[in-house]
Amino acid sequence: MTAGDKPDLLVVCHAAPFLLADLAVDHRLHNLFLAEDKEALLADVGGRIRAILAGGMQGPDAALIARLPKLEIIASNSVGFDATDVAAANARGVIVTHTPDVLTDDVADLGMAFIIMAPRRIAESERYLRAGKWRQGRMDLGTNLRGKKLGILGLGRVGSALAKRARGFGLEIGFFDIVPKNGTAYRVYGSLLEMAADCDILFVSCQGGPSTRKLVDGAVLDALGPSGFLVNVARGTIVDQQALVAALREERIAGAAIDVFEDEPNAPAELFDIEQVIMTPHIASSTTETRRAMADLVLENLRRHFAGEPVKTPVTL
Image (cartoon, rainbow, N blue to C red; front, side, top):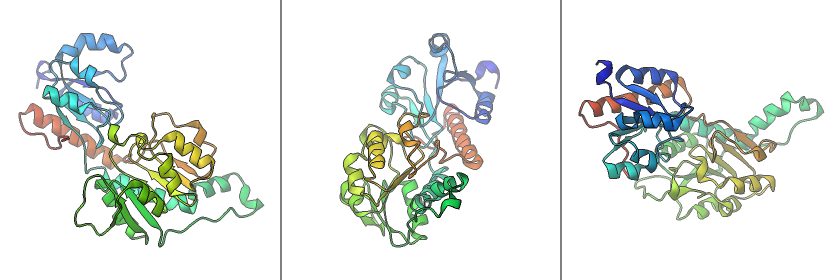
């Protein structure tokens, strides 16, 4: 393929160098995410753009989609696509793809690690040791997992994978999901509040977007109670962040482990000095193997589209 034959692709998200290098083989790249003058770039190349590389947290809105008359496909390098206005894309006949399945195990692994770490106070004990406090005496006791109740919000790919892991640790598993799940061996709750009131650990693994924004609010956290833990590896927007800060500070829940935040890459400073919080910078899928698999799926979807073939993993609403 000559340079003149390559379709123009607009990058609107953070992307690993190896993915950009691979994309550049068959596309002319224009990096809007890194551009100092975004308006100038769009004025120059907007009329030629046929594809967009998006991410879970950065994607095109309706206004950007409307400025790209030749846009054909938006390839999201994420299983989540809440940053992309899929409805606006569909109205234009623009295909949207994402990267499901390939990151399920890594996200579930981190979720299980959090479920172990928070009740056992592992991160807190590591800080306790580094601060030299062990010489002053032993730290407070943690809580074990056996026989505790795990409530899963969203029994999709990650939620199901997490449930399989959790059973090996002796946890009793239940879930709440707006989509009916047939044939499951787990307890089904009629509402999120009912589940939060009954479980010891609330695991958030539902899809982000407007329909789930602040779904886990102050009432849900109060139902979880002073012995309950919140674990979120899904999207920061699902949890009311200020309600979470208040619940932790007032010890209305026992602790939290969170990999995602409402306004990434900004984590709320109010959480930094709360000992019973574990925080990581959205690393759930951050392994070499998974990021390579995600990149390969992005490339395959683009290759298929421009070859006139059906894409492999389209987003369907």
